[in-house]
Image (cartoon, rainbow, N blue to C red; front, side, top):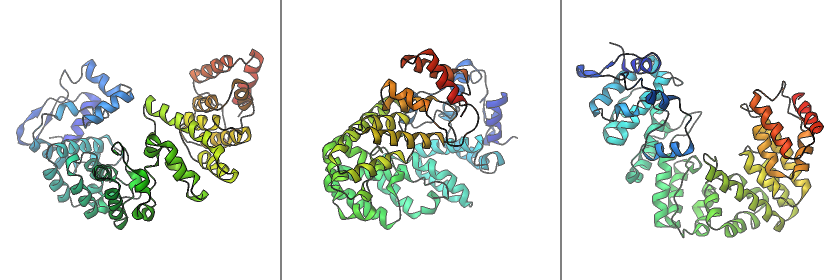
Amino acid sequence: MRMLLLALISASVAGYAGVKLAGGKHREIASGKFRSEERNEARTKRWSAGDLRTWAANGRSPLDPFADEWKDWSEGELKAALDQGVTDPAAVNALSDGRRIIGAIFGEWVRRNPDEAIRWLESLKSESMRRSFSGVLAMNWPVDRAAEGLAYVIAHRDDFASRDTISSGPIVTLAINEAAKLGPDAVGRLFGVLRENRLDPRYSKDWEFPVGFDFLKLMEHPETGLLKATFFSGVWMDRNPDEAFRYLVAEREIEDVPVGNFFTDVLPANDAERLEKASARARWLSGKLAELTADKQSAIVDGMSGRYMDPAVLGNFAGGLADDAQRDRIVSKSLQVLMKQSWMDSVAPIVELIEAAGDESWRLDTLESLKTPGRSGAWFVTKEDEQLLREKLTGWNAPPERVETIMNHLKAQ
């Protein structure tokens, strides 16, 4: 009998006829309906932000084409699948489809019966295998058991930490959200627990602070200072931007301004609404710099340009600066950071940044003088890339001869 995970993988690739589970029961995983156009589309579709939010709300991943198949499996069948899966080389390989599949099966079990799923997890003798399931456990931890979740993370801290990642974030988020309902003092006390147990709240996200939450009081709590917690700066800026700017920027020493946390609630921008909010905040922030000393202005500009952010966000920050020299400096630095990204094989992000940062004449001048950081070969890996740039240049009122000059310059980089 084939092991379950190999069968699942085969079913998705080669149309395997069925999977035999413990107890002699069969599931026609690759039945006619599974090979239908609808199911094939589900596995190959480019998921939109709306799709992702819907899947997340339902506790399922769009990367799991089998979710509808095992939603009616019994807990015994889920356990049998996991018992087989953890002995399968295809599942043990951290980069394999098999590992992702058994992770999804474990997540299904956690959602149904977290106590039994945890008992199974703790029965695994392999530390690396337990660690591989910890992220799934955290992502599916019951919302109404936040305190238990934090206690579990503290008791099994090593299972949630590896050289490459920290997977306890979703549970820490639940704990923060529960404490926030009780007010800033409760969150401050929680920060003390996190500090004492060496848990970093920056690995959490999607915090839910109630309307009217007193961020200023939280910032002044002793434990906030000891933990150096400013991860909630973005939420504070969204709720009360002037108060947040005054406390986080205007009244702080340069080295203590948490530039990297100004957008934690909206970045990465995985939908248009978040990107719009992040871009608007960036432009508002750059406009406020005129209220600061020259040294602090320069430090914040350097802080923004020295990190990778969404090109539209950096472009809007640069475009809102009153000082043209500062704008040119942040655009130059940001473009260099952007072009050093390993995935950068297109001009689209460059165009997006430049378009948000200045007027048509400035955009043309910037592209015409652009130098790539030691990259070789043309930027235009597809015809669509080149078509995009030509359309933009024409839309920016560049005469035909200048369009060709800029195109030739960029191709020669």
